[in-house]
Length: 533
Image (cartoon, rainbow, N blue to C red):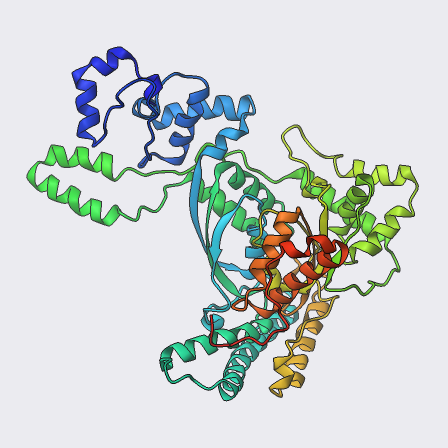
């Protein structure tokens, strides 16, 4: 930047002219701050240029002018992989499109605390034409048939319920005179999708886009490669390949046409233009090349799953409120309980009682098991993110969880997908006279899931409808509890997460009455105008 430009360069007419030609203005003095946006550098080259601030007096412009792909790769191989300077990868941001993955895979994919992206919305899009994923059943024709018949049935019921609930809402919500028919129908259709989505299976195909830094991408790929789901492992390989191979260039066709015009006038100049304008760009070829299966995660998951089975053997899953604000406890207890919680289906309080009943050596062994297979470069498992004041054990439908899952400022510890917790039934469905048919559809799905439960490929999980309940531990500070409660109780939101967010507020207000005034929530018990979005 300005403070790194020498007086000799500043006095050089060529230096000044090149800056002015680029639309830049030279600072009046070496003490003047210079701020400019950077465009056109590949993510890894940009990361290299920014990292050089710590090891070179060159300005950003000077660094980028003297860098090429080979220099960036050599630098990153040395400092990122040999010296462990992983923060360099935080400087390379990569945009990726992931299309035609299942909702199940999408939940696993986005489970990163440093993640930004958007997924197809079950509220604003009709998923009838999305199709669904079918695992490879090999020679098990009976299992394959059960799977396909159940998925087809759930999609048919999804279509039926969407139409039935639209008719129900339209009958009780007259169109205002000033509202256009198109807007009226679009709004009610979105509300109808709020109910219909409860029957969508997690095998449903979706699409999403993400923008993450290369360090997050590397850990994401390693985590996906370690998944028990074959689809998710293949997704990890595809992400790794996408980062290392040529990226899709949105301007390529336009630039190719320009190159051809130049070539027609001057073949030699056209060839040079083609080399510069049409060269392949690889967004993170170096920073993800060593992303492999995470043995620490895999082995810990295997051992913790077995230990949870042993310690909770014979214990029926106890009932628990949808939103349970947990009390403070020693960190040692929290760590051991959280490590077990992630690999069972029991509520946190039940797991904690088991942990509290163990001798100190037993709890110490659980915590030690959480680090036993950790290598020099492995980050601690998420369960070790302990000590937050506000911890909520939340049981809610999978569809609503997907919305709550977007909150990155809190630590989320999710349990495995299961039908063991039953399903939610929005009150409007039985009010509309469709409760019996809805319940029958849920029972049929649960039966199919149970029939496929013993398969090592976890194929049955894909048939879990989004109305099935899912348990997650949310840990956060006060500011995040206020933020979620305020944002998610808004009247335009889905009723599922509105109830959960309001439950969070009520739990904090009951335990800390003096803090209740900090929350600017919307009372979910107040009637909602369905036509106000």
